[in-house]
Length: 127
Image (cartoon, rainbow, N blue to C red):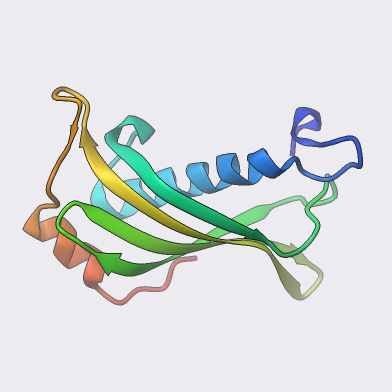
């Protein structure tokens, strides 16, 4: 956590949860589909439930993702941000996200390929 990520109460500012999730999502998309840059997808919808305090004492924030639905152009995921303390894990936020793959050269959304669709529908465990 950076000092600028905190609000006056010492909590991580609510918008920073979105930035943390974006970093995790971009990394996950790179590892799963080979989408290496955030300009290759766009967010169509995101909702977030703040479940627990996140503050500067968090040494590491873990991003988790499960694919809920794969459409022709869109993917809906259920995402979590968690922190670990001792042997305990606390989920600090749950999000639902709908994103579309984006073709920067044409500035339009694009259809998922058969290979991408197949990869996204495989059962998996994300660390």
